[in-house]
Length: 142
Image (cartoon, rainbow, N blue to C red; front, side, top):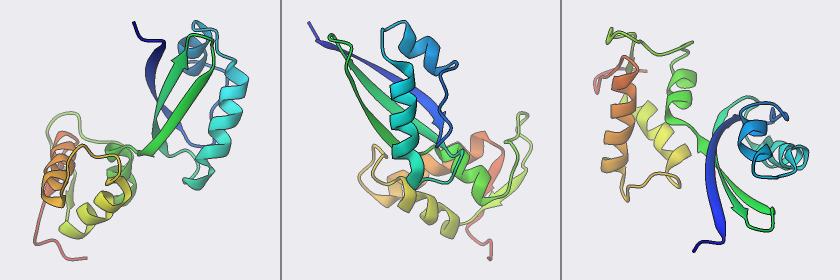
């Protein structure tokens, strides 16, 4: 039997407040929500304010916790890099991404990817881009 439970959240950097989704996920597990918010906001100061970050929280049976903040989500980085408000919801191509932009995202996220090389990570990034209506164009000039 495990002596901990693990939950994942996507939170905005430096903007955690004791409201849903934090309160609904951590409150029902008996975690001090305000302490978590303060700790998360302090740790996430290294990222641009309101960047979407993946957070993995390990909650122990004694109601203590540990958390890991991962790099911003791929979709967030794609939108930021290409100056998009949102992705396409109808397979319409709304932007193009180049090798340089893919490499920039890779360097930000490489510690969090579950791939061991750039070639595999590139496929993951292109897949995320494609699902958002962003087309990969190796010939795009910047």
